[in-house]
Length: 512
Ligand code: KIV
Ligand code: ZN
Image (cartoon, protein in one colour):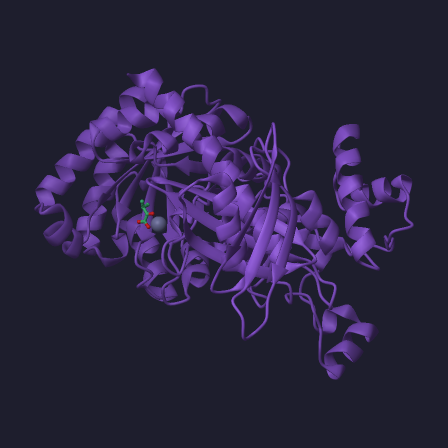
């Protein structure tokens, strides 16, 4: 079996999804989970983009041990220097330098002739090579680049000692036979091409990212790039879980495999969805809620007789477990701990106590606490942001012919404050009341709600993004009541915002 290297860019291209804004703590949490999934390489961010990005890449670089950590850089020395700074402390650092090569990008974006593109790329690979033993070079918009010019640039990258050369279909324009043919062409026409690994990087604008990436593998790509749940710019990137499961399920066809621990897929997907606030559609391949659900009578009958009639892979293979233990309000700590182990969570005594207390509160509201409920509770927060404001109670008065009013009680370190406000809806009234308590001037940039479980007593998870000047913060709230979940998410985001502001001002002071 040929090994296909997996380059994860959830923290860079994935974070470029509209509305997604991960803070350093969240990036590290995802990075540690990606390490458990055993991806080979992870792109942690674009250090030159902002001091926050640089700090986050550095935190990831120091946190993970068994994965190559990569920083993105345009073809300029100052960007390369930012990656050098960001990757200090990394066990296995790598720089990813890119330059656009297509006629459209050359003419309108770079305003460069072919020769200038070639020279600029060459100079930056040379500069990067002085400081990094591992260099990846990407020809941005390779998908719309003339084949002979592409071969010229790739040949130059090979001679300059790049270790990986990436061929992005930046705008998701190609179809599988065209994209596969590029790899074949480069293999046949670039001298010494075997000295580098060729990488596939696809976007999903026409829904062909997975098919294109698989075509690249069939034509000799050594590495694939993608994100968890396929998040990313516009329609997103190739979904890593789809490639891994396609290679696993059809190994006899592809003759290639990734080294991923496939049973970590479900958990990684849930974590990325939770921290980015990007809900996974029910019908999403591999990780959608319905990916292993069978609704029609004919299918259910087949499944009962022989699972392989309608299932080409098992839910267990991606880490979904069918658990026999049902928890409710009478369940004790022992059963609770057993269930956690069953779900793959080995927690410290303190974490178990914390989770058990939350579980008891939930079990009082719900007859049966499902695995999904528990997972949502467990994944709610592993590391807490300091709670400058702590929501104690909310009261909402709503009638379809009157103005909604909300009263909130919020505790701070030294006092408890109560405020009341009106709004053009119940959630708006709650948020206005919270604003009065916190005194923070914030803009609600995004609000989304999803049901974590099924039924009338399902838990709702609300995700909000708040912004204040240049700082954006995400918050999450979980409750069987959506108004309470909305209030919790908002207060959580305000706390994150305050924490982020502190970090920024500490850093600004340090650089003065
Ligand atoms: O899609 C793209 O071209 C990219 C490059 C930066 C590699 O993400
Ligand atoms: Zn991309």
